Length: 278
Image (cartoon, rainbow, N blue to C red; front, top):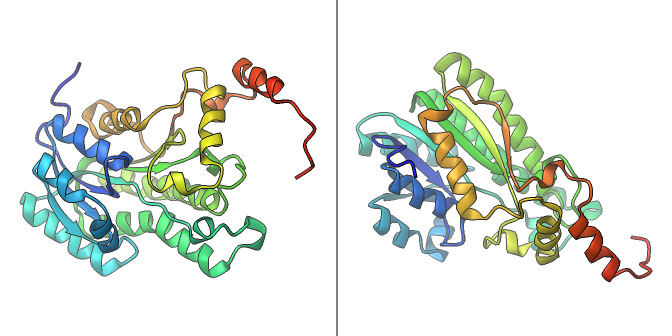
């Protein structure tokens, strides 16, 4: 096993709520690989979650910040650079929430007020983070920024609702800002498209258990879990991937390249019955 991949590096982790969070696993592995961290989440998430336990475990500072607030982000980045006495080397965006999904509102009946909140929280927050870091010149040359995404940006998955739109926008922002950040500062910007993972947020999607099962049956390698995703993120934070940018990395066991697998066909045949059109 390679060790100390992130020795001497410093970064900000957005979105660790509890030990089910992918961001939590990324923070643990980044710390184990030698990185120093600042952990951040929205004030309500900090109150509801257990991020203090993660901070204690990793020796990290916790700074409250609403990722949809430019003021909060400015304070976060400035305070982080004070803590580390200089620039940071990596950022993880692991933020997503849809009021339409939470309220069970069908996509065709979406509340546009809710949809705007979905896009602001789940995608535009990524642009805000990148813009703040860029303006403050907060990320070192050859630094790395990652946002977590999902294959619903490319494919329609029933029940995922306007989060699919948000993920498509998120990936577009990574490419657009990745070009600017790469050309001007040699900073990498990528997204990691993860298998459906039993996080607190993911479990709130209608039919989530069936989605996880279907994805696992379809994937030649099976679903990637939160620990697998953290490994990919650590590699992308490291100097081993200095020339990878503006990419969407599928960490999904092969699901994104599949049409139908033998395991899925077998299960389909076992449960075959006449179904009403939907």
